[in-house]
Length: 332
Image 1 (tube, rainbow, N blue to C red):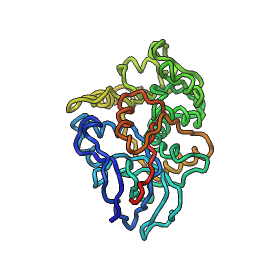
Image 2: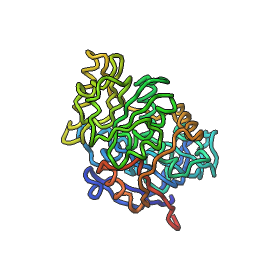
Image 3: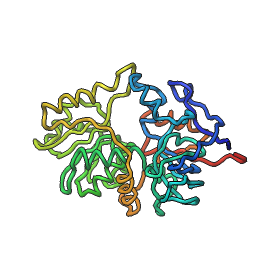
């Protein structure tokens, strides 16, 4: 069995305490699997929570998200090295991107349905960024927010991983887009298509009166009642953000309350979990190939600095998506 390097979670805690760069066996190739040499992998906030193990009630879920060898990460892009006997869509040498378990490593084994051919107009770093955050943005706006052309949508956390995809996807759907971010990110959010930008250090979007058909709240720092003040009577507040998780259940209160309130308040949308699937991956691939979504890359780190990269994302100030670049070790 060939060896490789990967970022392994040994326990829950801070990235410096919980993670190690280790030499481990490459994943086995299954009949329906694709062995990929990873070129780049991206970090989303769920990866960070999975390292922290917070809230503690979610730890069984976090354990299930890592690979059998303990490697963490879900979003990557790379080159196909081998395919299983039942795989028909890919062949060695193909440049692909998608989701899998254990993405923060030199090699991964992914399912055929979780992969797409990398668009020619994207770098491997950009392709690796089209992962969980992009699925979340697409499904939030299209499936759960029912966003349609001509409607007005407000997106909080517009400069973050989900937010930068949400701004672009909302524009592709024909919506009028307002982004909420900090002062330093205003020009970037405007550059990716927002029709207007609110600087939250200068203005509270909940005090502007009923205006929006949809509010996608990626931050969760306002009460549900206050956030709904920004909605038209027929509008929907879709929660997708919580305060930082803590303890056994800290951070779960906001979505749980939203779920309960949604039964009684028409404007209150229910919290949701995004799911990676072949059809939506194809949709994201098409949007990227047409230039309608261009991933915003915050910083790139080499694999041996991945622990630092995960800590950076956990600080909550990343602009767009943070990416790990992977160069295969000599002799691995």
